[in-house]
Length: 130
Image (cartoon, rainbow, N blue to C red):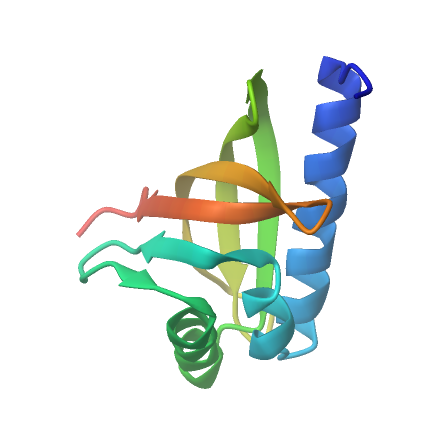
């Protein structure tokens, strides 16, 4: 097994985040769901957790249906812990006319599945004031 460096891990997660952003901008909730493990879990703000690719697809499709057209992910930290990567970052969600609809911070636990790093646990919360 090859030894992973911090740079390798950061680059792998950046590529996965780029795919997430691309699928989001294309309105492809199924593509987003495929970036999660088979037992992946979302822990969104203000709602119950949900697990599995269908629930994840439905959640992201709902966000798109609400008018969110773009997701930007800014990695702040990536840490390799055995067979797990922990990513901490900041996000920004934009609507059709490029208006910022939400922004905040997130934490993702990544696991390898089928030889690829996939989102396993995904939690975020807004930095907007009420």
